[in-house]
Length: 247
Ligand SMILES: Cc1cc2nc3c(=O)[nH]c(=O)nc-3n(C[C@H](O)[C@H](O)[C@H](O)COP(=O)(O)O)c2cc1C
Image (tube, rainbow, N blue to C red; front, side, top):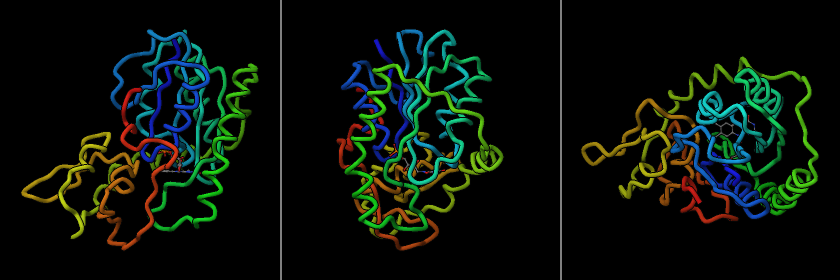
């Protein structure tokens, strides 16, 4: 059976993981909850967003513990600029001795929107064409057209610096007066960084900057640095309640 391991905050990676499952079968597994080393699967897919030209913390932490004998196919997705994120992941995985068969990257809607708003036109275009791009990659996998990233300039230093600072971003979030204490932010946070203390939503210092709380708050009550922005994003091609679940 295929193991389809994914990380997703706003559903883009889940859309891709579901398409992989639809084409090749297998079990979809949410990386933050997964304790295994994939030895129970025949083939591994890793579906992940690109963060800061690199990997989310959970994917970075997952790779060193994976079974080295398994074939791994990686599907990275990004909002605007992937730079050398595929090469960076490939190099890092090779250092761990992993058997990376192929690394694909594809554009999906941007969710790092703390400081700007994606114009509706671009968002809709990215969404409308997303399934086509996903299918193209699935065809490549089916036809064994594997891609290993060629040596290219990565932004490794920038990635590592940002990665080491992500936990600090929690300090810049606040639940404003629109918060109804539904505690959804608490349940979607992949690291348990949010809690209800004395009737108030409180952010700790374990944030991994996925922005799940920010985008998925039903009241749009989570603010970043006091900015009154209205734009939030959840991929409409999936059932939001499935983000974070094994399927
Ligand atoms: C912390 C963070 C960093 C990001 N860095 C990049 C980046 O370097 N390049 C890029 O094109 N998109 C970047 N993005 C956008 C996501 O990669 C993209 O929107 C992805 O499809 C989101 O996947 P998800 O919906 O499964 O969470 C970033 C998003 C976050 C939250």
